[in-house]
Amino acid sequence: MTITQPDLSVFETLESEVRSYCRGWPTVFDRAQGSYMYDEDGHTYLDFFAGAGSLNYGHNNPVLKRALIDYIERDGVTHGLDMSTTAKRAFLEAFQNIILRPRDLPYKVMFPGPTGTNAVESALKLARKVKGREAIVSFTNAFHGMSLGSLAVTGNAFKRAGAGIPLVHGTPMPFDHYLDGQVPDFLWFERLLEDQGSGLNQPAAVIVETVQGEGGINVARAEWLRELADLCKRRDMLLIVDDIQMGCGRTGAFFSFEEAGIVPDIVTVSKSISGYGLPMALTLFKPELDIWEPGEHNGTFRGNNPAFVTAAATLDTYWADGQMEKQTLARGEQVEQALRAIVDELPEEAEYRGRGLVWGIEFADKARASAIAARAFELGLLIETSGPESEVVKLLPALTISPEELDEGLRTLARAVRETA
Image 1 (cartoon, rainbow, N blue to C red):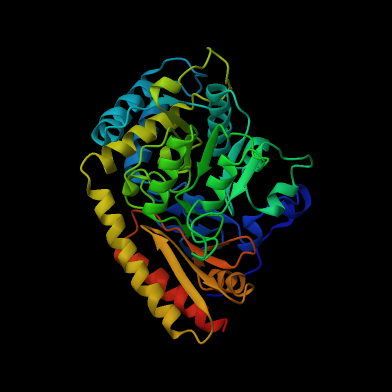
Image 2 (cartoon, helix red, strand yellow):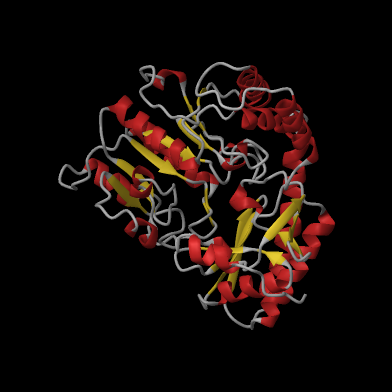
């Protein structure tokens, strides 16, 4: 595919240097539908990025778009703070009936603000309020957001450095596989907790991702998660699962922790909860933890009613019959087979890993992943990298992608791998 030079002048002169994704994809996008994006020059790109997991149901999903247009055309409430609205009621009822009750999850629902980091901040604040302690334990290579509380439990040194002040009250522990099985799981963590001389204050909570997306597609084993849940219960710590990128069906089940059979005390959800890419976030917690005073955690954009509309339509359309999970797992097997073939052909060291429809290939040559992503863009495929040194090629296609579209993207990825050897 021939790429003409797009006019990026206004972005380069006026927009801050902090811009990121656009540097890897130097074109001006104009339209998007399903699993495809189109730039202003008419080039077509197959999207294996899905808005960093915010577009699990594809771009401009027609069912969700219809619900949104109908709501706007009838002058439905757009901005409602935390007022009660028909749109919020419809979402809460759908979420309760389709998601929570069938899974026997007792959670209260909090709307903390429009983004994932809002959800994490409220989760940390609530855990500290409930337990009366300040320490939070997180894990190596974790990513939980860019605001200060979330950064304090994030592992990436580059992102942490952007805070400009000390990030305190967070202690990292080894994530699953971090020590390559040389040390029994949680040995260090348990020792610190029981030793009065360890210097670790009794934590209020532990926060964990079941699959570390930004950290390099690091997949925690179900048994590791169960051990962690047991440790938290025994040691009087709340368990927070950050399901912002891996929830809403990304790993198969609606919540990524379902496979492990655990029930976290607090769960953070965002990204694809609106279904349409509209800003929306939830903090879910067990009823006995709901000790907030009215207005104690506030925010102007907690009531994004258009997002409630598309979220309710998403649940009704994709989660009422149980088929989405089966489809995602089947698509995941398709990806796994293709990645196995790619890695088997490589003369150099590489490994693939993932769950559901989140996958990655890690290369021993850490510069290789970025070169593959750049070549993939030239070939019309949007993929990103992850990991502390961007050493992992990350695949995050829409859950609604067809087998044919998935095969097309995987063939393009294989070509990009070969052509950057």
